[in-house]
Amino acid sequence: METGSDKFKHLIVNQLGLRHAISQAVALNAPAGTIVLYVAGTASIITSTFITHPFGSYAIPLILLLSLVVYALMSYSMYEFSRKLSSAGGYYTFVSRGLGNSAGFVTALSYITYEILSFTGFGILGFLGFAYAIFPSLGIAIPDPEFLWMPVAFVFIGLVSLLIYLGIKPSLRFVSYTVFIEVAFLIFTSVALIVMHHTSVNLEPFTPTPMGNDPYAIFAMMIYAIGAFVGIGGSIPIAEETKKPKRNVPLAILVTIAVLGITIILASYAQVVSWGLNRIDLFGSSSDPYPLLTIYHSAFGPLSIILFWAIIIIVLNSFFTATVSLGTNATRVIFSMAREGALPSFLSEMNRNNGTPTMAMIVLTAISIAIVIGVGAGFEFFGHFSPVNALLTSSVFLLILESPITYIVHILTNTSLYSYMKKRTKMKAKDLFKYLVIPSVSTVTLIAAIVAGIYFNLFLVDAIYASFALIAIIIISTLVMRAKFKEKLEYLGDFSL
Image 1 (spheres, rainbow, N blue to C red):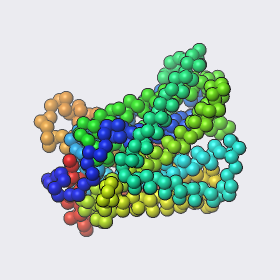
Image 2: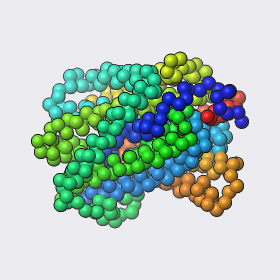
Image 3: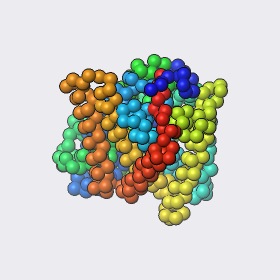
Image 4: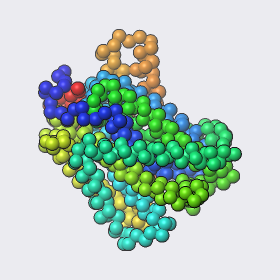
């Protein structure tokens, strides 16, 4: 198998350092957006689905901690692979080396689909939905709300695309500065909230007691909250452009787990402690959908108004930087597939000055505009939703739609690790544990996640069924590719620095 830079064109190497790799992954996760939406969303589902546990939201820190452990297990395979392989192909390069080109093609299509759905659902529609939901309560009137979100979406996508076009170094410079401010602000204010409510500080939020010691309810909510840490592998597709990638990308994965775990879990604990157990049943309710904003609006005395507006700006920027990071990764994977012959070669065209995959970016922009306008308008005009509900529901629908597809990527990566390492390592008992047992535990959890989403009917379960249809299309496309255009898969996953 031929690898390296002699056979294939490649992106500009050694542009980025460890700081950029960490920033890319943390920003992709959008800590502020996650804290505002996932914590409130988890509380809302607990209240509506597990009505026998009225104090269940008090256990959100436990739920997030368990979800982090699960995602850390999921990250083990990507960590091990990233120590061996460095390519913009990322996950599909891993899977191609372990299970072959067909499985690699399934992974590639699944990853691109997931990135596009996250780019549109979390990034763009998340930004629009949050703005539409919060501005009226601030006394900011939205003119022509039925239609204004459409040109705003165009402008948002245009700004994201421009930043990506300018090159990964300036875009990640912006991302790294703003994500540092975001994380520092969240940690500092969370610690301040805990100190101010020190009489309420206790360990109960990290116990199953608020959930009535119900293992099924805790498991179901843990599965839902896995998405709160989805950015942990965000540095993998930029490995090709990172200095010492086989050192810095694995290290970025570990640091990202720590940064996201501390930031998100600490903030969730600060929220529930500040809110109080006696009225936790109202936490994230329809009458108060963003409890974090309510807390910041009043908890800091004369500084409250400043910190309140600061958190709003940080959340909005969090969606923006997440969209930039998602777009950066998607363009890299599309570029990589094209250079290896699995997609049309024009998609591997790059800007000569900064190495940006320009045609991949243009295609991503066009597809994203179509999805945002199509899905948003569909819920608003055909589903007869109000503009704000249409945007929020569209965002959640696309996020749930992408979840099983994301799990497929991780399941295939987990399965590939043992096959890949078996070819290169004489397996001992400890190796079987590292390369087979740990990934298998992660895979079982991911399969359980899909089943739990349907069984507990957590939210918009039809989106999960639609996801199955997309997965079927991906598999059929792979079978057609293998039967009719097998030569196009010949070099898939071959490139690695």
